[in-house]
Amino acid sequence: MNVLQVATLNRPIRQNLGYGPIETVIYNIDKGLHALGHRSIVACSGDSEVCGEHYPTIAKSFSEYWSQNTRMQRETMHHHLFSSLERARAGDIDIIHMHDAVMVEYMFKAVVKSPVPIVMTLHVPAEDKGPFQQWNESLRASSLAYFVPISDYQRKQHHGLVNAQQVIHHGIDVEDYPFNRLTGAHDYLFSIGRITSDKGQDKAIEIARKSGSRLILAGNVQNKIKDRAFFQTLRQSIDLVCDAVPPSNGQDYYESVMKPILDSDKQIIYIGEVDSAQKKLWYQHAKATLFPIQWGEPFGLVLIESMACGTPVIAFCQGSVPEIVVHGKTGFVVETIEQMAEAVKAIHLIDPRHCRNHVKAHFSIASMAGKYAELYRLIVDERTSCPRISPLVTGLFS
Image (tube, rainbow, N blue to C red; front, side, top):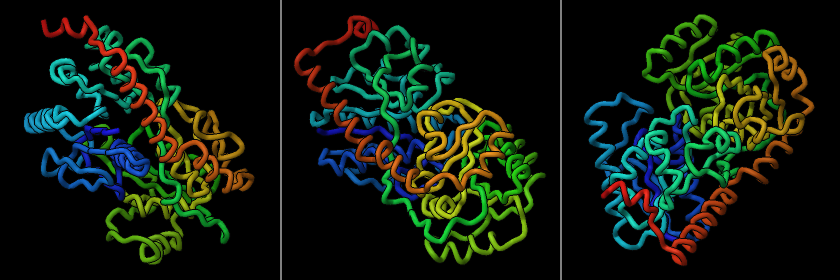
């Protein structure tokens, strides 16, 4: 199977990213397909590092998630999309796999002209439905586009907007996540994610205070007025800010960065944005990861990353959380701040091995890539046996 993934441009597609959830998923799908013996081609920025074939459409990524919607950015996006479509028309591509909902706005003007079927992973919540709403009837009637929700929660949210039936959860390479609980975890809680009110870092601080626990906060502050204002308010409750540490990994990072922070007498500590290797160490040594989410997130990679390290999760019952965390076995799913603070005291009841085994069984790269490969095959076989173009879609160009 020859698959062309059309990547996002906000961050490069590579393994050791800091913030970049969609880019991480694209990398993992590429890695999984490549391992299964499929030909995986990734149309992305030139500063990316992929496992399959690298097809650069621009020299460098934007380097910022949700950067300002400038004319240059729009022109770059157009160039990326049309360069990707030109590659798809070369005749050797079986499936185009897209990840950016904004591209749906151009789908029926350009993408639909390609005979290659399209798979679109739904990374966005249904509230961001502008592009889907614009083409609502066409999308639901089209035989050209296949939409994949990343959780059952998201599938229900998109009901009536697009045909999204087969849920494929995200997966990670569990072996890339360190698991060593023999010496016990440090006595701190960990919370990682974009610094914004939706992620609930203010609630995490409140929970740490109520439970008498140390809290390590990690995450980037995006260039948004709302997020910057939230961080300025949040900062008043932070005891120590260490967001300018030099990059380093492994034992060197632990000795030079983590240990001095953990040896301090401060309770609420903000460490800024960390890369993939660094966050794994913070997961590994934490007694629990807090996920005080304030919105219906379609899928939280934080949940499976933490559990892969054997670190249980304490999360609010929002969005896809109940699909991912097994209450009482891999963590606790709660409703209130008080319940979350109480769960911190009971975290010793969770067996770290259950956490890691749960991710291995349900959220591995092999499982995710295998399900996508199966979907690709079904689509190709269906179109080979019964090729068709929706009359409604064809009418868009008449």
